[in-house]
Length: 377
Image (cartoon, rainbow, N blue to C red; front, side):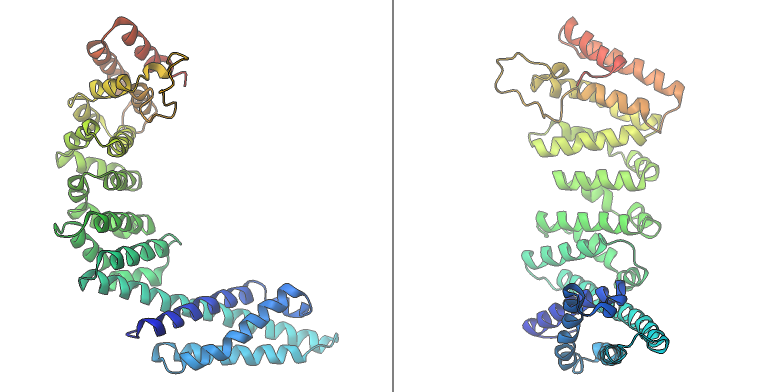
């Protein structure tokens, strides 16, 4: 895989085109019967046109030599198929047998190409992250890795990831103080992608390592959004870990920052914790004056109950903090972490806090009504 960049790019471009052509052959091998139809004819011609170009390149690459043999075989099968044009039973049976072989072989070619591309993806990621490449190169390979993860679980790709110790490399980058925030944020999203890719393997690594503390220490909107994603993927085990590590106060404190995007991410995280967390988690948030902070956010935006005067041109109807107090309370009520009795007790506790933090009877009455009966928004 250690080719010069232009040659490497030519190989990858050819492989992707060949993979797409092979996929079309596998999905609809019976298209050969209808060779005169434009769409099917184009599919065949695309594959046959790629074949000689592929052989010229693949024969010189030991990692692609077997693929070269498969291409030669499938070209021979296509030529045989085109010779059986009769409508008799013998021709029909021969066509069916050859079509089945073409479908199987094109599927094999597609899989072999994907494995090679996956090897390149993992190799480039590890090499770039470990060899001190510039920020742009690191961001590029991290995005490509995330795109591959987003295609869904693949056992062979997972084996490549584990053998290359990709998670350890990403985790080490996340806690490295000399790494730029932009790269660390892409690393954080890649870690979330790994957990989504296979929770059974990567959840334990997240829980045992420094990932969660690193995300909270980064204190950026991206890192907290990733934290929120991990909470939604891992659920109670991660929420309990956050509580045990004493991180609840730090998460709530982000609601008081000047950075609006960070406050929004923190509020989403608070909602996720409230929906999943048990009584101790909720109490930890309430002890940090969460209700007062949410009321301040709601009040500062002029969003009490989402209503303003008609002549208020500055009102933002899409504010993320509209009716945020009642939204938090309602999430607790429909959430999965509290028993029915605990939900009633917590609701009364929140109502009491609303009364204490309100600046007027009207404000207290409005927010209390939202909590009891739901927001009008």
